Picture 1 (tube, rainbow, N blue to C red):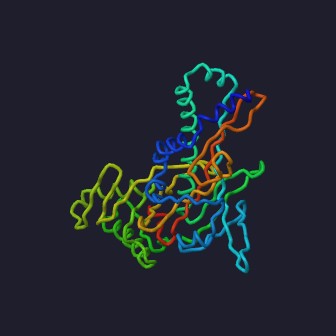
Picture 2: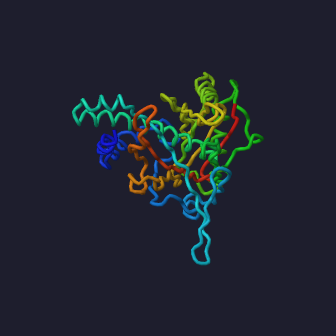
Picture 3: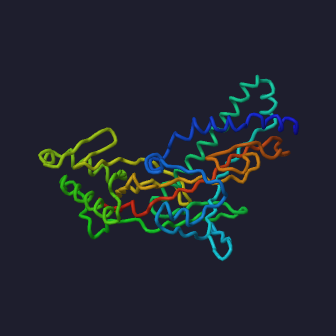
Length: 330
């Protein structure tokens, strides 16, 4: 059994993992991950200096319970670091599975292993998507397990911009295209006041999108001088393009939508929203930064088999002042 474990490692080469990442990491289950966090950066240390993140997000992130900051002294200077929490995925190859693999040609064994790696990558991608979606609110509040205890992975990046409820005339069936445009224009103005807003994308929750779609399809709206356009999953109003975001994720309270049903979220795509990947705590991975790594782990006796462990250490860092919410437009 131990001998086969050593042989199993040859199917988890750097070339193989890189190929699986290339094939899978660009398949985004999250609209926020796909459209906002296009920029990613591999950080060759297990922790990220708060000053480095601040250069990106123009703000100082605050680490709360479950994610202690590490303070390290350099001479007379103190530098605070965030240690991103790892996404660890465990698969199990039973002794029976291993016996079956021994009957296959080596390239077929690699195909089976690739399938296992792809399944792990899918879980990792969904988790990254959840973290990205939460960060769009200016904070991450995600369940984690620390030494067998349920904790909360919690990082605050600061307050995003917001069109306050008192400044919103809620949209109804009798609203006009001009009413929709005013909300969007007010949100854009708030971003502009914070030196952003040059290249925006707008996410709409389910109810908000359906209401705006109904307003545009209303016969009385056809005569409006504000240009409108309806596409498959997008609406254009006076140059503002609204995308329906149907993506969801699981957190400690259950299933959550990336964009709440009644909300609009405007994001400047030109802002340097960055998805960091830090160095992995894995000797087989060479202790280097990578979006993902997988390798055989311990041999288990009951049931008999080998664990395959997948790892990733992502941290999405949003530019909070380049994000504006209108939380209840309907």
